[in-house]
Each structure stands twice: as C-alpha cells, then as structure tokens.
Image 1 (cartoon, rainbow, N blue to C red):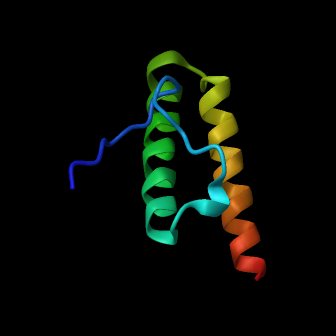
Image 2 (image 1 turned 30 degrees about the vertical axis):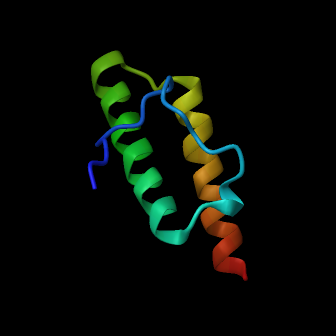
Image 3 (image 1 turned 45 degrees about the horizontal axis):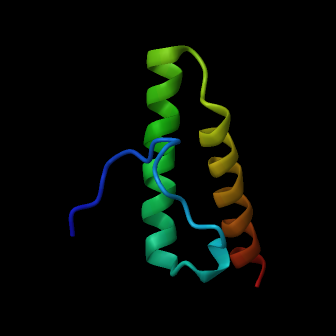
Length: 67
C-alpha cells in the first residue's frame, strides 16, 4: 500500500464519508492532520479546504462513536 503522507486540498476526497471503511477513514484523518500541521507551520494558517475536511472527518468519527 503506497499511501501519501499528506492529503493536499487539490487531492481527491470522498464525497460521502459514511461509505468509507473505518480503517480508510483513519488513514484519511492522518493524511488531513499532517496536511493541516504542515500548512500551519509553512503558511501560518490552514487552507480552508483542509480545515473543512478535518471538520468533516471529526463529525464522521463522532457519528460512528455515537452508534
């Protein structure tokens, strides 16, 4: 498996996170978190798309935890 470490705002992101398996969701979360960290360090603030993706992933994890 050759996963990217970061998921840039230009990279594809699933439209419906409910269709993503738990393990893949965790990989996406790690990629988005690394990108968020990179943007803050390199640019001083996160890209709005990266922030939105981070929020969407948090919401999906919360929904799954509530089940």
